[in-house]
Image (cartoon, rainbow, N blue to C red):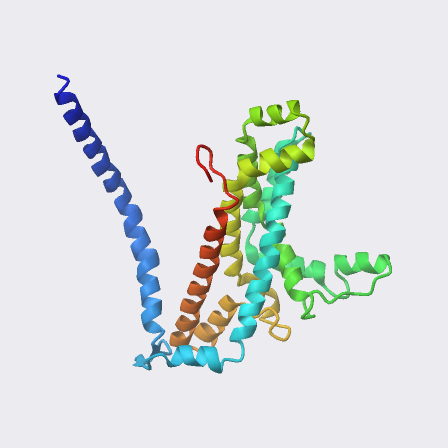
Length: 304
C-alpha cells in the first residue's frame, strides 16, 4: 500500500492539472482573440496606407517615419499624455489612500460614505466631464464664483493651456473610487497584531502608518499604481467631451490623436502606427514600475 500511494497521488495531481488547464482554455481563447490578434492586426496594418474603404497599399515604414519626423502633433501628444498621467496617478494614489484610511475608521454612517466616494467611478464618464465643465465655466462656474468671492480673478480652467491638464487631472482623481475600494480592502487585511506590537514599543500613529501599514499595503499600492498608470495613460474622454485637444494642443492626448486620424481623417494605417507606438510606450512605463517595485514591495512570507 505504501508503494502504491505516491503513484496514486501523482495520478490525482495530474488529473487536477489537466482540469485546471481545461478551465483556463476559455480565458486563453479570450486573451488571444481579444488581445493578441487585434494587436498583431494593428501592427500589420501600420505598414499600409489604408483609408478603410479603398484597398490597403503597402508603404513599409513610411507611417513610422512620418510619425517621428513630420507629424505636428505627436510630440505634443506624448507630453500631454505623460503630464496628465503623472498628475492623475499621483493625485489618485494619495487621495484614494487618505480617503480609504478615513473610511476604515469607525465613523457614523460609514457604509453611506463608502458608497458616496465610490459612486463617481460608476457614473458615465462623458456625463461626469460635462458636469465638471459647468463647475469650470469661466463666467458663471462654481469654482470661479468661489475664487471671485475671495478676491481672485477668474481662471480659465479649460481654455488656458497652463490650467487645462491639471483641471482634467483633478476630475480623474475624483473618479478614482475603485482605488479607494481596493485600498480599503487592503487596510482591513493588515494584521492587527503588528499594530499592537508597535504600540507596545511606543510607536505613535505616524510611525505605525509608515513602518507597519505602508509595508503591509505595498502589494496593494503596487497594484493600484499599475492600474492607475495604464488607465490614465489611455485617457481620451476629456478631449472628446470638453477640449477637442486644445487649447494649443495642450490636451492633445495620444488616444485622441489616434481617434482624429482614424475616424476624422480616415488614415487607418497611420492611426495604427500611432497605436502601436503608444502600446510600446505603455509597456516601457509598465516595465519601469515592475523593475523599481522590487525595492519597495514586500510580500508576506518572502524577502520582497
